[in-house]
Length: 360
Image (cartoon, rainbow, N blue to C red; front, side, top):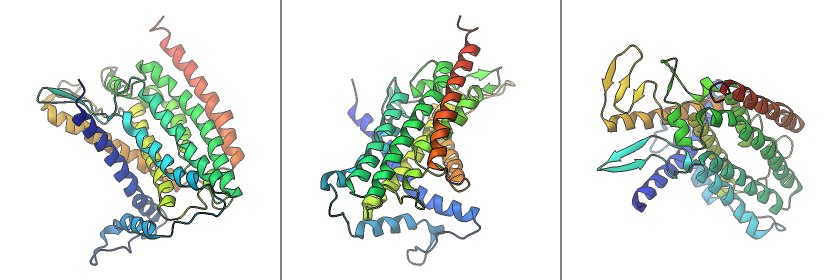
């Protein structure tokens, strides 16, 4: 029997986590770019004279966008123009639902999966949600009655197709290694050890797939160096006619998709919630030393491990965002179809050849 209270609690926790991380990423992006460019960064917003390193800027931005005029072009499609930003935010938010942030928590005889939605095809669910998110971008471009916005929406659709195919092919090696489409089972499978001391993380067993997945994932999130749908120096972007909080929702979508990509990279290649040498009863090191821990302590360490890995991945994604220049549109298409996709197929073949002796 399903306990609706527990399910609601898991879903609420994941939603709040994603929303708050996305909100704080606006500040992270500003401060990280400032550090890389030897600037101070955003630090003007204050409350009673307290600036707190600029942490109040996300609040100031939200208030500013909520109070700005909600402009709509005269020839715009009223319904689709208003619906587009909500579609983008919704699918970016629900995409995180099947990503596990811990193993099973046992409280008062109950087993609570630390995952908002338990699906045996969790990877397919995440990809489906990320793919549906492009509809919001296309709707925004078409309904704005602006040729530049329409061009941005078409670019986003083309980029999504080329990136999603490479993205799906790149993870097939991981699925072959761990034998499941369930993200929770993949995370558990990465708790095993190679040669008795090397964690069987996806980045160890599938290094090429990790590089391909990360590259295609950045393209799927429409972030630099793959921000052709919103290149300010070329077409201005699919959201050129949006103002106020609707404009802010598109920015929030990019941050949410970055968080989802970091969560997927963590679950597929960085061991998920796994901590090296940490098992259900505590630490067991290769040299024989054991440290016993309570189940609650183990769960806290697992959740902390997942959050830390996601934070590191987001930092790395932001590092790429402020380091690499933008690809031309034709370069991005060529990279997706003639670079990432063939290499993903090659990775599948190589993985099959390696696994064949063990699975005749």
